[in-house]
Structure formats: C-alpha cells, structure tokens
View 1 (cartoon, rainbow, N blue to C red):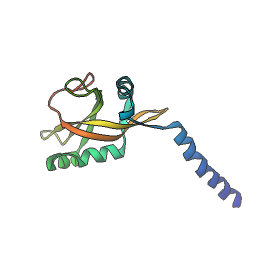
View 2: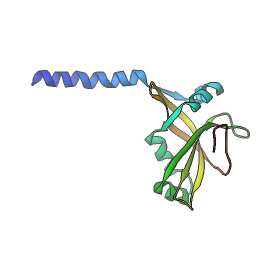
View 3: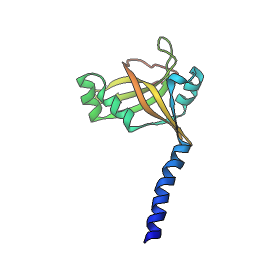
View 4: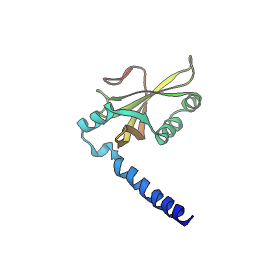
Length: 135
C-alpha cells in the first residue's frame, strides 16, 4: 500500500513537469510579425479560457447568441487596415440569427500537438473576410 502511494505521489509530481516542459506560453506582444503569422497558421484549437472571453465580450445580443452556439471559423493574420496580428473569427447563434466577430489573439500555447489560442483581446464585428485565410 505504501509503495502504491509513493509511486502515485511521484507520478503526480513528475507528470505535470513533463507537460509543462513541452508546452510553451507565448505572448503575441513579444513576437515579431512573422512569428505571429507562423503561429497563426498552425492554430488548431481555442482553449476554454479564450472561449469564455469570447462569450462574455460584446453586446447582450452577442452573449445570448454565443451561449446558444459558438463556432470557431478560422484563425487568420489581419490585413490592412488591421495590424498584422492573429485574429480568431467566430460565429455565434443559430441559423437566421448569426453574428460574426474577430478576436485579437494575445497569448498562444505551443505544444508538440500544435498551437492553441489561450487568451484573446479586443473584438471586432465582422462583415467581410479579414485576412488571407478568412471566410
């Protein structure tokens, strides 16, 4: 019994350090435009924190629609007049009531599995494609 507890204790201490060693938290403010573009092209998911930030931003209508349905359409590098930053394009609401917004990516999580959006910043209403990969 003691041996199992000891092994479980060692494993619980070792596993988080292995995960942390493989995952990097990068702030976009400290990256160059080309580094941001490279990361943005590799975004594979949006973490829960960023999703919650998306839902809580904007008008009462956006909050209502995004609680009903929130779909991440793409991650794209903004083109003029926007700054060359990474933006996540999200669509909220059921058919017939949809609204789109672009969210500036502040922080990325980079791991061997890919790049995730961790924290978002300012939001913009979207009526037309924003970047190279936008819809």
